[in-house]
Length: 446
Image 1 (spheres, rainbow, N blue to C red):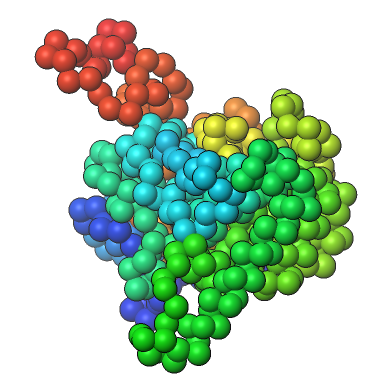
Image 2: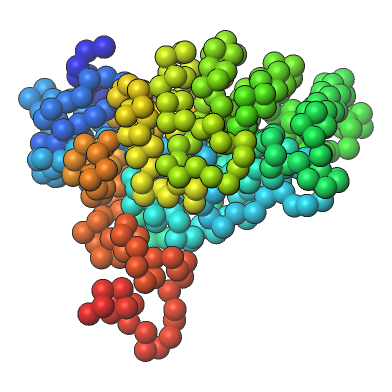
């Protein structure tokens, strides 16, 4: 590809996914003088990024981008601009999905339990994250529906989770389906006690969903012939129709193969999550064209089935032809140090290009959002971060995070800085209302 992304005005013919209510109108801005890492094309040594109306209008070398008259210029000389990071697997928001009544509960919606004012969202912004796939835990074979959110925290906290939804063009919140296998869901009845029983229970429910779908199709729109509505089966039908991507927790090599077998049988699209043993079955994963959302931790422990986790996994999968993203599983990896996952992967043999894409564009693809986020290109959402150094350096800090063209995090703001560095109040979701409590004094010590 050419070294510059051709500048282009945002045309009304672009497909725009409906989003939550936008913030107050922002002026058109041009960020000038920074090194720009657009993702998918060559890096720009000294570039200009123009944003307007929450979208990217132009990006390219400084001497090739014409800045429209009346544009506010922001001097970011010596800084680095790259897309906002995308976490394909997060548990921020104090979430709770399926309960102990059974191992398969696909009708549960995780967004019905998210605290939109949870301090974890502010930590994520401090790490340069702009989009999350928030999902229930992995203690069930199917624990519920995930939700894709934008961290629209400019102007204070959102009023409700609806303000963060990424929606389709019909206004419905976008999300996937969380599934799991391995030891997490193997416990006392009614949960399965073996891997074989786990696969059996999943197959049984997908077969019921097939039959449910067939009944609906035979009804031909006649309400009198429709089967009773079943929220659990509806979600499985959406997965088989490709409307809802399956995000599947799986660690051991044999568990990974079981997931691929089920995906082939029932036709659902799957993203394999964690894949501690992915390096052992990289060819099989590549043959199945299944992307992987990988977690890397530098202090392995706890889960026996993850004992063979390797830093080399990202590079091995990349060379096999597998699309790789990383995720935080926050709190397993704190969102503030998410970039470190890609840095460790590069040290272990992954290419720099794939590593940077693993934090951005690859994750967007796994959420079906690559047409909107994941890289800096005209027409895409103005989600980006400003760094004080190379993104793969552990010494680099996020200075600002922008979402939909509005600044959502600024390290120079003491309130935002608190979430970046920690300290009293950083983990508090709501401020005390005591008459004599001085929040600034408590936060700064002054």
